Length: 184
Image (cartoon, rainbow, N blue to C red; front, side, top):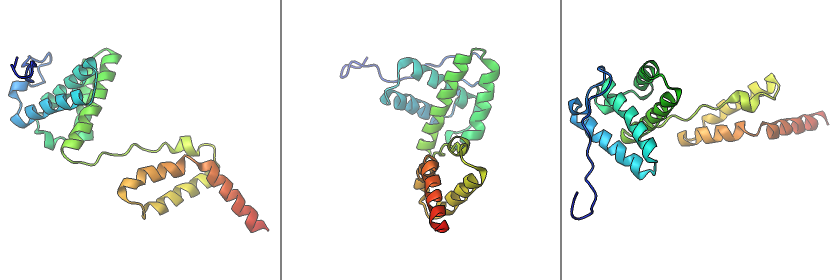
């Protein structure tokens, strides 16, 4: 305990992993140990509960211990999929696999933020938004979105596509109005 704050300084326990494929924390490179500690602090400052922080940190330890690369060399989707496969084969509980998967998602977000990589936007579920429209109108809407994307800033692409996709009824009504005008 420190006298000034009454809190113990952050530290990392050097426990032996249960799987021999995973390296111990003491055997990691120094930048990876610092990243892991910073990840723990990031979760704490983010307001995550103790049980979530614990399982997310286990997932991060598995990723850093299995991959044996410096953190800036980790390819977020490809390398972390290897860790997901490891978790799927070595842990039988569905709840554990799900929680560690969430931890890998948080760790991927932290890696992207730390390495200043752009975070990929989630894909738009076109079937959900355009499923009720006729195929010809849905194809026209997708072509229109592709046409408009050229003029959108990269940070606006997802939001603008989502805004267009979520209101196809309004576009269909506009298309119907245009047909009425052409028929007059």
